Length: 96
Image 1: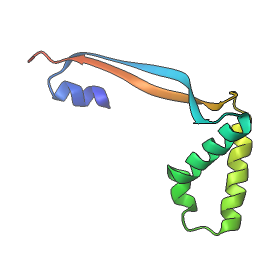
Image 2: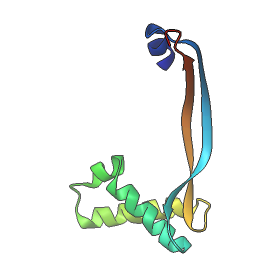
Image 3: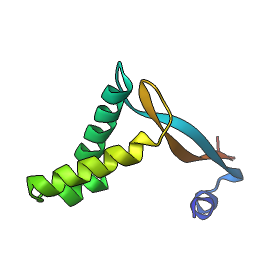
């Protein structure tokens, strides 16, 4: 894990804390526009875009509809709010 890497690099006082937040994904002037934008981003970037890259249009359309249905359950009016998570890592470099 990251703590071993930092320790091996000479860092001390290592602290690692989870950070969870709702983050906007997709945006638009209306809820439908926000959903459209979120679906478009999902199909253009990330693992789903790669999985669908060589698929026929009917498969891509079914995937798009499924993604839209999943995002429809997320809150937001002009964006789709999804769960986000990150790790906040701090450490001291005694050499500096």
